Image 1 (spheres, rainbow, N blue to C red):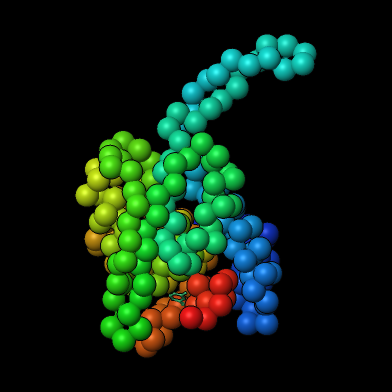
Image 2: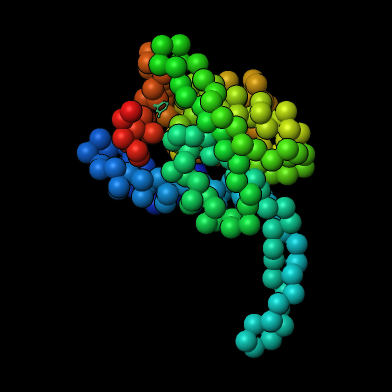
Length: 208
Ligand code: URA
């Protein structure tokens, strides 16, 4: 099976427990999404290129670092919206695009309803933010849109991934790396991740 990069850290496990717990209230759930997003984005940016920049400390001249190519962030609405602000806080210079994909609960297929993306993404790192990589349909659709715009450096940033979604993405977009806070067991017959955390959009924003 294709292997995602899973962030191993005790603080990730603790926040993930908050997300999974069905008694967690919405505000606490959203806070844990933000905190985990910061950790997963941190890991997703591990190999980002930097270039040297000259600065002065109060004491002396020094050489610092700046990102050579700030990424474009693409939250997948609705659930990815809760990750947007925390990801942007990690990379304040990032441009943000948006993709809207609803899931047809009968067919489990993605139903796209909007895309607002830069026209050209060639050579630019892109982080797609979606908390749940379940069937992989929404993520694959989003990456199709990015590839149409020339994207060739895409990372899928998730909180919980299912093996089925990781595999589907590996088939559709073999160069895309998945970085996640957890890799769960499987999908159930309704397309929910097991054990998962339920519907990440509903738990953040309320059931529609
Ligand atoms: N989307 C969710 O929000 N949760 C799942 O378990 C699967 C897809």
